[in-house]
Length: 417
Image (cartoon, rainbow, N blue to C red; front, top):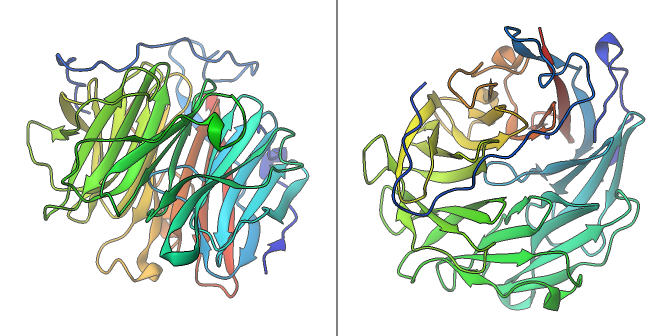
């Protein structure tokens, strides 16, 4: 059983608040990614947005907080986010056994509860949509199939709708999710078909009929896995791993009409090389519209950047030892990457640490791989997840060495020194 853990007093009087090298190549002749947009204004006098010219951005970290304990804890790390911020509240979902648990975190602590009808479930994904928080997961049904279930809260997590399925089949877990305020996009893989599918909700009726029909990526003939999705303005980008070939390869597809149709998939061209052996991709847009693709290859992780899914990408961070990299972006040019940092046997959790790289210039330079304080000496941390929101950094991880296991959270505030 998951137990509620009260928040500790944060160091330096901080409270849990708000609310998880190479040159970028020129644009190709293919589908372009979205143009830049203005940054969110900040009210903090010491914020990155208001920093005087010549000042250096930095992260001021609060003390780590124990969120919950339980058996067989899992986070939807790597390809999707496990948390979202809304006002002064952090919303988080995790799996304990086969049941989805929801966490609402404020300055008063962590409130943990089960979600309605959330078992037997796969790893949940979280995204914001306007005033709503949406959580999605794949749930096992009779006959060995899975349903893609969604729930929504419109009152900051106080109450939740009953789950309903928007897709069903031999679905893999986890599902990927992205929300940009105008729409919510989910990507998943159906093993019966082999392809990645995308389904979109634009704020209509909260019912199966309120979602767009699922759109398949490509013409078939692949065995897809580990889909990731990012939405910005009119553009939606999907990345997935093709396990038809060995070693596996990463493919990208884009939509310029809000997810209604997609381009033909293109194999990731990284540093002038095709194919790029790799997998477990994670995609995110920077504030200026550049697309970041995190991936793993031969026991190392890296982050690449490009301007079109059928164009050239350049490695902008890595390679670093480990697996399961997740990329995310905040305001201005703040981006981050998090992963399981280890060498050797991937089944040996005792050798794993949280790898974290934080950059304030879209990975032209970065602090890492141990940007989280104390992480270089903290072993036995697995399944880390990252959220960059406004001027805040949220890092989540699981400690599997305790009984019951522990879910931890640390928040940081972007400042200007």
